[in-house]
Length: 117
Image (cartoon, rainbow, N blue to C red; front, side, top):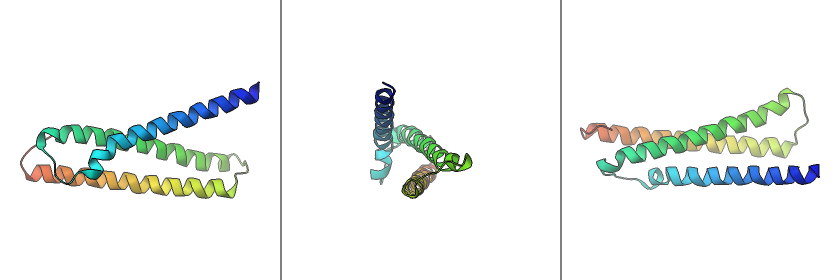
């Protein structure tokens, strides 16, 4: 019975993470495809992008914690787990830097045009 509960809770956890990733992609998608923008939509893009980036920061913190916690309590972690989690952290870091840079560029473009958020 305990094994069944563990399997169900793992599936629920994976489902929640997938839903959060889908939400994150939906939130930051306009920022990826955005070359120019209308000022009436700028505030919406800023809020969506900031919220999506915040979710990515939470995922990054969770991943770093998962990577370092087990080593701190001296539990044996498989090498492939360490490698893939490290690559995941690097990919998240690259995405966070890209989206933060894109938001700064949009802010600078909007401040040069004389409009404010």
